[in-house]
Amino acid sequence: MHSLYEWLWQPFAEFAFMRHALIGCLALAMGCAPIGLLLVLRRMSLVGDAMSHAILPGAAIAFIAQGLSLVAMSIGGLIAGVVVVVLAGWVTRQTQLKEDASFAAFYLLSLATGVLLVSKWGKNVDLLHFLFGAVLAVDPAALLLVAGIASFTLLTLALLYRPLVLESFDPDFFRAMGGGGAVAHFVFLILVVLNLVAGFQALGTLMAVGLMMLPATSARLWAAQLPGLFAVSLGLAGLSGYLGLLLSYHADLPSGPSIILVAGLGYMLSLLLGSQGGLLWKVWRLRHLEA
Image 1: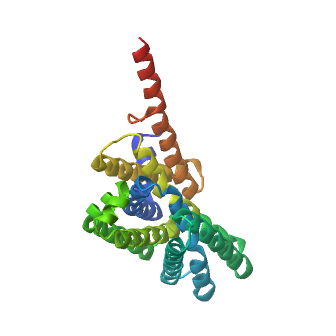
Image 2: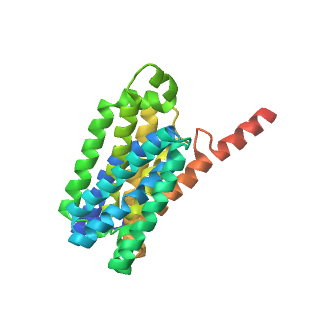
Image 3: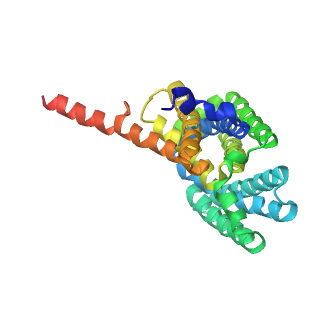
């Protein structure tokens, strides 16, 4: 019979790679959770998915040139993401296309280019690493990168909290008042790219966006005020990382998908039980009104 200690903490106490993975997931949650929540509030949930693919060709080119170099791949991914942000913004302002359509077009081009580059000059294992990451292989250098980006993200959000929140709820009014909405919006998109670059080192491009969006979407079903939304989103992201690593260890499953599946389970439970529009609460209220 396993004790609670053996189930819940022994893997982290016994193995350094599990501790590194847990610290990486918690640091990632600190940066990704508030960014994901702002994406949800701005009705830009799919932009996170688009940007996760936009960084792929830059990281792939850096990988071909420098191998598995953390710094080179991060810089390559950041440059590719910023290029897509600038191009999508320029197309939106110069044509009748909306921003989501511009991002969708560029992310498909980026995804195809990245997969082509890795398939041509890399191996299938390299492509799997890009897409799904290797959280159990996170080293101290990667931890410093993720923690640094999370700290920079929180500091920037604290400085731009008011314009970002105002633009999320009423962008037309904020721009009419000359509040610098375009600058805040561009800085916010750069933060999205930075956190996805940090996330793909550990979870891969496909998985990083899951830890960013699933806790944020779940939080909308539990809280109505911004402080509560940020707290729930952050708590769910950190808990998903911790429980996902435990699931991966005890059931001998891949760690990245385990973390995202736990976050997905949290979303399903929130959908049923959430106090702000959960399905069971709606059914209970309807029966209460009929009675």
